[in-house]
Image 1 (cartoon, rainbow, N blue to C red):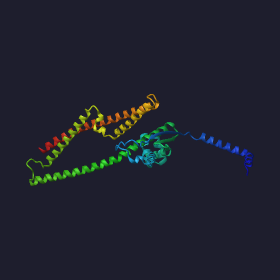
Image 2: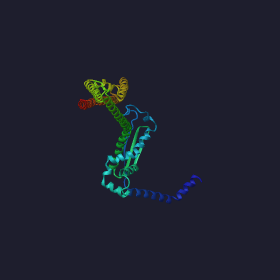
Image 3: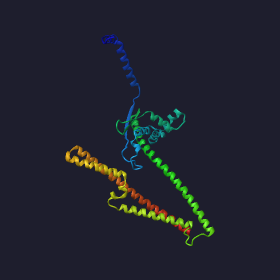
Length: 334
């Protein structure tokens, strides 16, 4: 069959082809008019893989792995994040939603999990090409509601991501606290048994240095000395005019990284000044970046300084508490 013959066949059946085309267009238009309107709200989050982790103070190797972005997308799509969205927007407290849940499930299961599954069905999470940006989209009949859900998913993702990093450290701390408490109780029982044995057998020095109560008093005195030393150290550091010379500031990994970035940009700014001039847009843009880095350095330094002040207040409160314990122990030993 030649091309000419094919065109002649189409021309002979032009009425049928036009009728099919018109019917298709009419059906599509009718369905579009009958279906309710759908609105898609979108927001974006940036996954920072270069800055040091705020928990451990260093860049973790896992952040640079190829599957790290896929893991972040799975976190956004997870039930934990969706249920946090429900709690952030208090959807589980809405009486109408509760009625819908009762009708749909006969009261079986949990309302939060049911709402989370409904939200996940209309959620669309896509990574950007060749960047660390993740786009979050949500489709709904109400544009305001869709925007609120999309923003809530971004907020819930950030909160969930932080919780996933903090939770293991919290569990380790709780475990070590339990172990320390158990060992301290065993030590106190052993010391009490030793003291009772010494009193029973008369093996007690004249100065009672081996006595359990006196030993506990000495331990409290040592703790008080340590707390006073920490408080004095914090007070002396707060009196220093240049906070950037503090050891805590100089050893802070984030501040050191900011200093390195600032030195690199200042070197490039000096080159641009000679090549392009100070009025060139590229020079002005880099100057703005340098000012932003300096502002961030001052902010981080202020955080460290405030932390030192907080440590001083904690030491003062600890001193008062230990002094009260020493006074109680002195009366007990008398």
